[in-house]
Length: 236
Image (cartoon, rainbow, N blue to C red):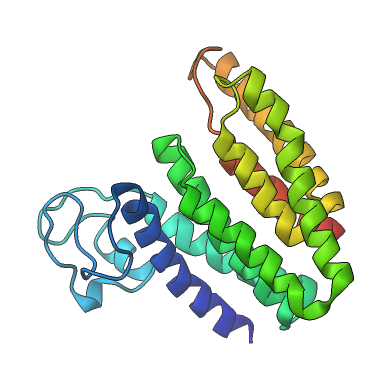
């Protein structure tokens, strides 16, 4: 079963890479066929094997030899790793599937936020809807926790985004609300704490090493995503 989850995770991670590239450009995530972002040449089927094709080609396009970035295998490996981790934590059941959906959304959001400093509404709002709808078949208690988690996640960052917009965007508010709709109030608060702590540490390291300055904007979405992962594995 672990091998199957790994393989599916790598394939899903490859699709998430497509989403990370295409959604910010307003492109369909289904059509056209995968292509090189530099020369626009269609990628052959035998160059689409996750991780393996990247290693064989040395991380370059077969046609134009442009380096396509380490993001692609990292996302594939990370997605597969999360799948295995969730399987060990929850087994193969509805909870596993719910969190696979959540973390696929978070991987795409984190990738886009890192590259473009934006969190698309289509992802965060769709995620909120999925989180709420997922709770409906399980009855009132689950619906209550989903609504409460979404409310807590959204409202706790709202004042900061309103009074300090240069430091906290509304995209982060909606992202935390989305996380809350999946995990509930307790875990979303833990995710915020873990994400904030990690972001602070990484920020101080980057500033101390002169990689960035104090005025350099740092996307918060990836840290919230990691905070959610840690909190779900430990608390949920």
